[in-house]
Every structure is written in C-alpha cells, then in structure tokens.
Image (cartoon, rainbow, N blue to C red; front, side):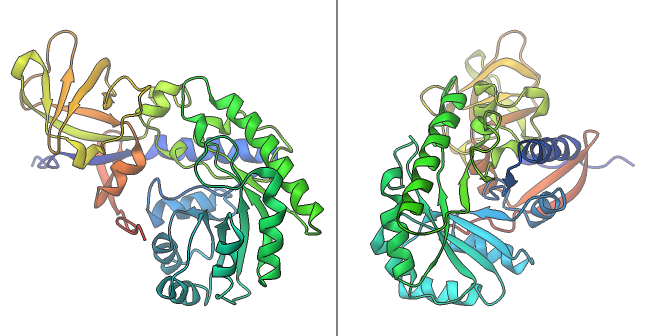
Amino acid sequence: MSVEPLPTPFVAVDRQLMLANLARMADHALAIGVALRPHVKTHKSPAIARRQIEAGAAGLTVATIGEAEVFARYGFDDLFIAYPIWLSHESAHRLEHLLTGTRLRVGVDSAEGARALAQVTSPLLSVAVEVDSGQHRSGVEPSRAGEVAAAAADAGLRVDGVFTFPGHSYAPQAGEQAAVEEAKALATAADSVRAAGLDCPLTSGGSTPSAGFVQPGSLTEMRPGVYLFGDAQQWELGAIAPEQIALTVHATVVSHAGGRLILDSGSKALGADRPAWTSGFGRLLDHPQARIVQLSEHHAVVDFPGRLPALGSRVRVVPNHVCNCVNGADTLFLMDDGQPGDNWPVAARGANT
C-alpha cells in the first residue's frame, strides 16, 4: 500500500547530514580548545539541542527570554541570552521564575542596562559585556568594556567576561577578516575588564562563516548556529558545501507561467531575507544554476535554465536564511535516505519576546 506524500511546502531535515554537521563543528571546537555553545534560534528544537549537548556542547545560546523558558522546560539548565536585554517589571518576573533551576547568562552593553538587570538577585544569574567587533549593531567599544563590567559588578551582578558577534562575517570573503577583528576586539575588551579590577574568564564569539577561521587561544567559547543545517547564504559564502546542506523546503511546481518555474513555497515558508550580495531569494539544491528571483507570500518564481520540471513534480528549496525559515514552521520532518521518518516540533517557534 503506497504512503500518501506529505503536503507541500514542508521543512525537511536530512538526519545523517545534520548529525555529520553537528559532529564536524564539535570536533573543530575540541581541536582548537574552544567551548561550543550553539545558538538554538536556528533550529528551536529541544530534540536537536539534546544531540548537541550529547556531542559535547557546554550549554546553549538563545535569543530571547521566551526561548530560554522553552528550553528550560525541556531540562536545559545552562543558557546564554547573547543580547543586551532591557528588563521591565514583567520580564524581571519571568527571569526570576526561570532562575529557579537554570544557570543563565545575559548580555549587557551599558551601565543602565546592568542596573536594570540587578533587580534580579538570583545567584544563578550572571552577565557578559557585549562589545562591537565590526558589525556595528549592539555592543560597547571594546576599550570601554571595563566601564560596563565595573557598573555591573557595582550593581551586585556576577560578571563572566565579554562577548561579541562577528556578524560582518556574512559577506563574501569576509569570514577570515571578521575572525581576526573578533579576536582583537575580545582581547582589548578582556584587558579593559581586568584593568577595572575584575577577572575575565570568558571571551565568547563565533558565527558560522567565521568559525573555521577561529585560532586557538583567540576566544574561550564559540556560538555558531546555522552550521547545523546550512542555507543558501552559507552556500554562496562557501562556508558550507551544497552536499552538506541538511535542511530544505520541499515544494511543488504549480505553474510554468512566463516560461519560469512557479513553486508553492513563498516567503511564509522560506522567510523573506535577501542580503544585497546574494544571487536570489533562495536556491534549488538539485539544480545549482536555478535562482528564486521573485518571492511573494505563497509563491516562489524561479529562473530555471533548461527544461522545466513537470507540473506537479517536487523540488528541494534551500532558503536564504534558515533561522527565519524554521521560525515559520510548526514541524521539522526528519528524512532518512530520502524517506520521511520522525517529526520533531519546532517547540520554540514564536518565542520572540
């Protein structure tokens, strides 16, 4: 009796490729003597996080209090919210509740932010000072990290050290230089903290495009996320080879209008990210020359060289930014040798506050 195929679009994860990517990064971190604290905003899945911990991860990185709450409910007790958060009365109450059994580190990049965090008095809460290593998003100048660390300590907070996100690695040929600038910024920041009379055991950084360029001794902890699945951005950057891409969106060819391929996977399935340097809104894994050139909510328009796949056939789409793709999905469908296996819920979907 034949099995009815899953309705499209759906998010498929090649189990063996995912596990191979997981092991490769764990081995790399071990080889360079850096603790691995993967960012779970990429997959939002406790089942996957459990496998990362089993492979040697020191803990997990999360994006929000909401993500921390979800993963804490599943038993993960060492979490880092790697962003400066501003506590309201309500969010302070949520942190107090979260800290009943979870070690939590939170980012801070101002004295005011540190004083706001100090209303939470649990000994399980610590902070790390975020510094700007070149992305120019959040983060204090590295030479001023000591000022923020001292303010946090004066407010009664335990300071673990410093961290950064080398987000400027997300550009062609930028990964190696971003890793160099990351190391320099963290070294300057650590010196600043020590000059303020505080210890600085933590220097945390890392992104998927720069992870391969991290040098031993340049940081103590690395926080990549996308490495687990890969996406079209990493493919175009050369950070992940197409044969290593573990997550795709399976889509159906619904039209040949205009001599192009029209798929049923739009921005609500793929995410809408398109950095200026990318060649399209996504790619087709099995057709490397094809490009998604137009994206609406429920349709993707593909420039496809050669004979078009038949109407009703299916293709595997590689989204530009896998984190946004996963955040729009309810379920990850695990594939074993091309056949559907387990279904894993995206438990932290929508946990964006």
